[in-house]
Amino acid sequence: MIDDTVQVPDGTALATDVCIVGAGAAGITLALELADSGLQVLLVESGGLEAEDAVQKLYEGQVADERLHSAPHRYRQRRFGGSTTIWGGRCAPLDPIDFEARDYVSASGWPIDLSDLLPFYPRANRICEAGEFEYRASAAFQRPLQPMIEGLNSEHFTTDSLERFSCPTDFGGRYAHRLRASANVRVLLHANLTQINFHPNRTAVHSVLLQTLDRKRISVECRQLVLAAGGLEVVRILLANRDAWPDGVGNSHDLVGRYYMCHIAGTIGTLKQPGRDRVWHNYDVTDDGIYCRRRLALTPETQRKLRIGNFIGRLHHPRITDPQHRTAVLSALQLAKGLISYEYGKRLHGGEAMTWGTWARHVGNVLGGVGELFAFGHHMARDRFLAARKFPSVIVKSTAGHYSLDFHAEQEPNAASRVQLSQERDELGVPRLLIDWRYTALDVETVRAAVQLFAQDIAGSGIGVFEYDPQSIETEITRYGAYGGHHLGTARMGRDPRTSVVDPQCRVHGIDNLFVAGGAVFPTSSQANPTLSIVALAVRLAAHLRATAGSIRPSVIASADAVAP
View 1 (cartoon, rainbow, N blue to C red):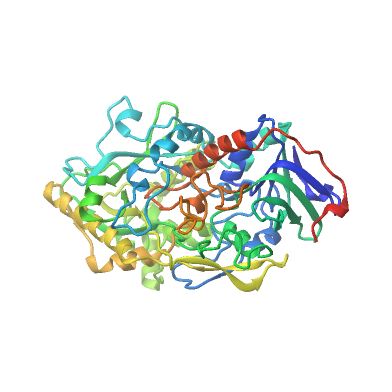
View 2: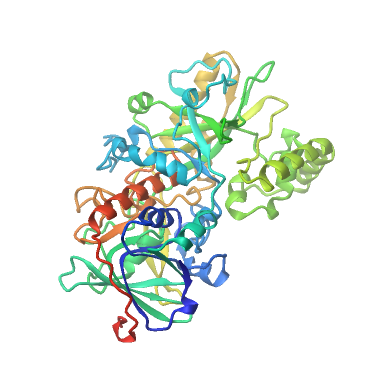
C-alpha cells in the first residue's frame, strides 16, 4: 500500500522487518524484490508523488567551488521515484577491469568481481526496461549495422560496445501500482529520517525516528535498515547521527563522505573527413524497440599499458555555441537555452557569453534552415515528447562531416574529494552538506591519452583528421565539473573497515543490520552511467536480505510513548 503521513497520527510507533529509506532506483528496486517475501517492508520517502518546493529545499547545501560542482539540490529529486523522474535512461554495465585493484589507480579494487554481479544484471535490465542484457553490438543485432566510423583501424578502441536506453523509466510512476497492491510492502510518503537509535551494545539498529515538515514524529522499530537515499544524502544521514558515535555512524576511520566521485566528461575537438561522411553517430534500434548507441571504448589492454582509467567516447555534433556550424537546429537550441532544464542545459551548452554578433549569426542559421527545423520538430514531437519510449537525445547529422568527441571517463578515487556536514541546518534541524569535489592528475591524463590515441588512429586509418588543442584538456574536463547526478563512492565497499565503510554485502562494518544501497558503495566509478549497476546491486542486496532478515513479522504498535525523544 502507499500511505501518506498526513493520515498517520503524531506519535505513532511502527514495527517492520525491513525499513528502506529512500524511494529512488535502489529503494524501489529493493521493495519490488522483497514483495511477497514473507517480510514486512516499510519504504520511507521524504517527498510525495509529485515534486514539491518545500521538500526539495531540504536538499540545499554548499559547495566548495561552484565552478566544479552544482548546488546539492540540483540533479536530485526528493520525491517518490527519486532522480529516476529526471534521468536520461542511459544503461551500461561495469567492465571487468573496473573491479580490479590497479596499482596505477589509487584506492581501486572492489571486494567482489563482475562474476558476483552478473547474475543480477539481467533482472536489473528488465527493471530499467532496457531490453535484454546484451551490451555488444555484434551479439545484440542479427542484422549488419552501418560502421560507426567506416575505415577506422584501431587496436586501442572497440566500437562493438553498446549503451542501451530505458524509456526512460520513472520508477515511481512505473512501479507505484505494484507497490500499492503489495500485501507486505507499505510506502510512507512525506517522512524524513532524522535519527537512528541503536541497541545499547551499538552493534545493531533498534529503531529510527521519522519527522514531517510540520514536525509530526513517527518511530519505526526495524530488524534491518537500508539507507537508499543516494550518494550524497546517505553521507548526511550517517554523519548527522552522532549519539552513539561522536564522528557519525560507520565513520570510525573518517571514511564516510570521502572518495567522492562522479565522472569526468566533456566535449572536445573536431573530426574532419575529406570527401564523403563516414560516420554513423545515431541510434540503432533492436527488434524489441530498444534504442542503442555504439561507443568508442578504450580496451582494457590499452588502459593497463598506458596506466590510465576507463574511457568511452561518442561522436557528437559540433559545439552548439559556435554559429559556424551553420546548423539551424543547433542554433535554435542555443537561442532557447533558457527554456531547457538545468540538468540538460548545463551539458548542452558551454559557458561562453553570447555577443550580439554571435546572436545574429545564430538567428541567421535559424532563418536559413526553417525546413530543417520543421523536420526536427516533427521528429522530436513524434519520437520523444509523444512516445512512450523516447528518442534519447538530440542527434544532428553534420552536413560538413564535422563531429566533436563527447567523452565519459572514470574518475580516480581521491580521499581529498569529499562530502561533509556544514554549519547550516535544514528546516528539520539536520545539518546541510558541504561538497568539495576534486579531480586528480590521472583524471586529466586518462582523457589526454585517450584523445591523443583517437587522433592518431583517425590519421593512421587515412579517413580524416581530428583537430583539438592538447592544452585544452583540463579546461574541457572542468567546463562542466562533476558530471550530473552520478554521486559515487562516499560509503565505499571493501573487506577492511580501515579502508571502507560497508562490507561486500553492503552492510556497514560493525553494525549487524544497517545496509547502504546505491552508488555510495562504489569503490571505483568506471566509465559507465551508474543506474543499471545501482539496480543490480539492489537486486543482489534484496536476495541477501531475504536470506538473513528472518520471517518474524512484528505488529503495528499505536503508542505515542514508544517514540524516541
